[in-house]
Length: 385
Image (tube, rainbow, N blue to C red; front, side):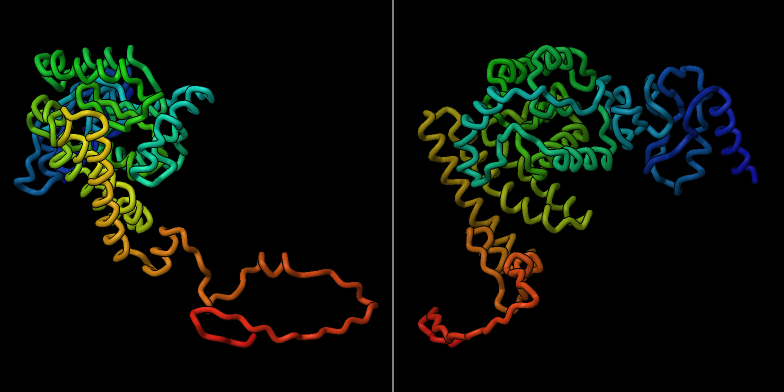
């Protein structure tokens, strides 16, 4: 009875003070502050109450968000982002940045030029939707769902957008990373973003210093991989050091390995077999290409491209082997990937085929049907029809 009274008193005090949400406790994250957007007079919650609602030794802390724009769960989303409070884990540092999704304005000339510039990437990954500069709502929704499921609300997702001023501003305002890291390695990363605009040159990536994702490819697994990069960077103990390590030579060996595994695990957890197959088809050769590029970072362009292609071929071979095992019909999957599409002999003709082949005949006319035997030869065997 006392426990119920304590919970009721906390809920009532917050509701009367003008907040729009009641206290909620996510995982092991316990907050003592209840700050809704525009509501700074909320009554603090009770750490003892939170502790009593969780199992003993669960790690409930009284630290909380305490940032305007966050509510008591630490994952309040009004409507895009939480004013810098990220996630349901108390160890996550608050970046002070706003999240959300933004799309660049369509420009046929610029996007067409970007599509042409991205042809090498399309050939290496053997997918025309890489650096297509035309991201579908389905791909965006996959990334939205992933970020929401992981309590990530302060990541800015720029879909086919170029905003150097916004990136420099986010670099200066990111409180989660020490200025020593931001104004050295971080400044170099944003300089690269400024001088080599992805709106023209493509390159899907997550920038840990600005907490932003740039997305130009219409492949859900590519978007999820960058989301996984964001999750691991945010959850890292030493965020500045981890962010800097993402730009080191051979970094894909530990950065992309974990991100690819995260995407596959997410696809299995959400029971999305097509998404898992796409991860093998797209992320494995992409991983190989990135490893090849990073290992020969200081080599000439021709050598780097050759290394990318060589490592990507290995990724294609391994990825297709893995995809073979998760397909409902491995034989048909391999044929479709190879461009050989053949309907199964046991499959009945589709309704569309029947309707297209039907000929409307006049009801009063008399017709005579003559059947002529045909000889069809294939596989060195003869069969009469």
